[in-house]
Structure formats: structure tokens, C-alpha cells
Amino acid sequence: MNSRRSFIRKAAALGTTPILSSFINLSEPRLQEIRQEALKKSPEELAADEDFWAQIKQSYTVSPQIINLNNGGVSPSSKPVQESLERLNHYANECPSYYMWGIMDQGREPLRENIAQYAGVSPEEIAFNRNTTEALDTIILGMPLEKGDEVIVCEYDYPNMLNAWQQREMRDGIVLKWIDLKLPSEDKETLIKPYLEAIGPKTKVIHLTHMINYNGQILPIKEIAEAAHKKGIEVVCDGAHTFAHIDFKIPELGCDYFGTSLHKWLGAPIGSGLLWMKKEKIANVYPLLPNPEPKSDNIRKFENLGTRSFMIEQAIGEALNFQYAMGNKRKEARLRYLRNYWAENAKKLSGRISIQTPFKDDLSCALAVVGIDGYKGGEIAKTLFSKFKVHTTGRVKVDINGTRVTPHVYTSLRDLDRLLTGLDYMLKI
Image (cartoon, rainbow, N blue to C red; front, side):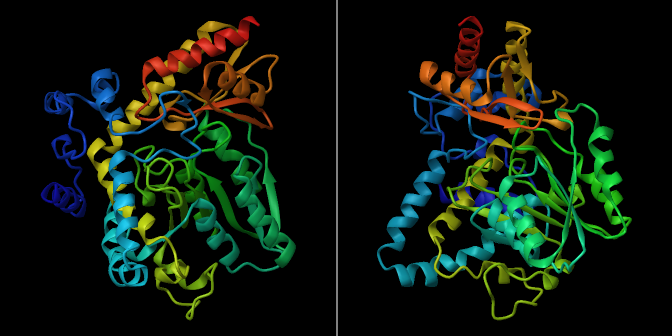
């Protein structure tokens, strides 16, 4: 097992994706045959291979009584991650102050290097924290902004981020400029235009959400960032729902700051997150929790949390191994395949059904919202769960009114058929 894990880590360091034969935690009799077959297929072909994904499902401990289609909130960890966390927790409790500070704390730098390699950035630009909110609050509350400086935001941005910007508005006198996005949209230009039109001589920052949590709409971050930089404007990106969900490297977005939750699509332990910012920006951002050298250009100043769960942090590495084993492109293709399966079949049920998420590959993936005329989003979610034990989450925001459906790699077509049965039931009552 150690040699296989070493192989994965070495492959990560070399910037390669390990082949499926290095997938160390599945042990079903037909696994080797499935692995060999998977390597012969494109991600799109593999996405429809139910036998292969049924084997992947065996590495999860999800409830057989509840069909979890709210993986966008918090994704479950695989068995290897859970086992790693339990092992580390037992280890730490043998002598906490010694094992946590003396042993586990030394594992942060190798982990930083590995996840930086995965994200396509320098280790000197990566800091670990607990979630997207903490990562982006660090940026928002620490940026050097003055009274009258303008920040462009949108009602579809995540509430915690808007709370942070509004606190700066109250505390420092910055000005928030709100844009009006029409969602869902299949047209990039209609998504880009409102941001560019809102730019003025006092605009200092544009806050962007890579994937809108309300309906799964992906924004064209790169195009907006390029236009913003031409005018000296910085770009903050909320990547809570895209990291380890769709295949990209952080620099490809063109943003200056990025935050994400590793307990979402990477499947790391609950309470793990990531902050990234360009090296040249670090010195100008104050840490959220005070540091002896707040103007340092060392990214580690943002990790001054005091006693934290070293066990959670170190188990991130096992989640990264699991991600490498599946492969970004294979995972993304499967997630989109699942979304298309249920959404396209839901549309066929009735004209009262609306899919409030675009279908274009570059504008969406696993997250999607389904609405039914005559129902509020929360009512749909409540009925699906009470009658069919299908767990979704209601979403009502501006033009969005439905329930958000978010499958994961362990989701089967049979699970999605149960969702479709529930929607059909609601159409008939």
C-alpha cells in the first residue's frame, strides 16, 4: 500500500495523472478487468459505463436509505479518506501536543506542494484553512481598500461573501455596485456584459462566483478578468463549487485571488479549505487572524489559526490521491453525464418542468435546478424527501425557483430514476 501511495505522490509531483491501476482502495474481484477496460475508453465513453462506476461507489459509505442529491453542499469522503482521518485521530490522541505539533505539523509542506501541483500554482501561493468562507473573508476583509473605492458584486454571489463585502461597506465606506444577471444563460456575452458595463473610474475589485450555487451556472471568469486587468482592477474568485469538479488549473481563470472548500468536490474531510492568491498580492493583504508579521509576503501568515485539526488537514492528501485515481476529465464527464440523464428525462415528463441551468458544457456541470410550475423550490425538495427519501435543496433567488439536484460519482442511474419518479408524482397530485 505504501509503495502504491508513493507512486501516486511521485506522479503528482511530476505533473502526471496516475493510471487507474494505481487506485489502491477498491478490491472487488472484477476491478482489474474494469480498470484495464477503462483505460481503453475516452472520458465520455467511460461516463456511461455503469459497471465501472458501480465499483467506484463501493469506496463510499453513503446511506442506502437516503438518495443524496445535495452533494454540492458537502460531498461525502471516500472510505480511504475516512479511514485516514480515523487513523490520524487515534494517533494524535496518544499524545496530542507531541504528535500534532511535532509530527503532523511537519506534513503541511509536502501537502502544500502536492495540492499546489494539482492546482497548477506555486506552493508559495497556497494556504490551508477551513472552508471557502474563511478563505474569501481573509481576502475581502484584508484587501487595502479605501472610502469611495468601488467593488462590483451580484445578487447571485454567495451570502457569506456578500456579508463580508457589506461589512467593509459599513466599516470602511467602500461602495458596492450591484449588477443584474439574467440566469440561466446559454450566452457568454450576456454574462460578461453587465460586469464590464459596471466598471467605472473608482472600480477596484470585481467579485466573481465561478459556479453559481443557486443553479450551477458557470461564469466566464477568464474573459471578465482579462477585461478587468486592462483597467487595473483586481478579481476575486469564489471557486467553492468548481475545484475538483470541473477540469481546470487556477491560473487559467486569470483571477488574482481564489478560495474553495476541499470538503466539497475533492471529498476531503469536512472543515477543510484552500486559499490562493498571486505571490505579489500577499504582502498587501492583512491576515484574518493576526500574525506577528501581517505585511509579510509569506503565504503561511494566513495559517495562524492556533490549535487546529491537524488530522483533518493531513487527510486531505488521501482525498487528493482518490481524485488523481479517478482523473479530472473522467470525473467531470461522469458528473455531466448524470446531470444530462436526469435533466433531459425530466423535461420529457411535462411542459410544467423547467431546467433552470444551461446545458452547454462550458457553462455548467453537475449542479442543476429543476422547477415545477405551481411549486416553490422548498416545496419540491420537501416532497421529494418525505415521499421518496431523495435529498435535494430548494433554491429560490431572483429568477431561480426550484430545487437543486447535485449527483456525485457514486450516484447511479437507478438513484436518478427515483428522482424522476418523484417529479412525476408531483406533476400528478
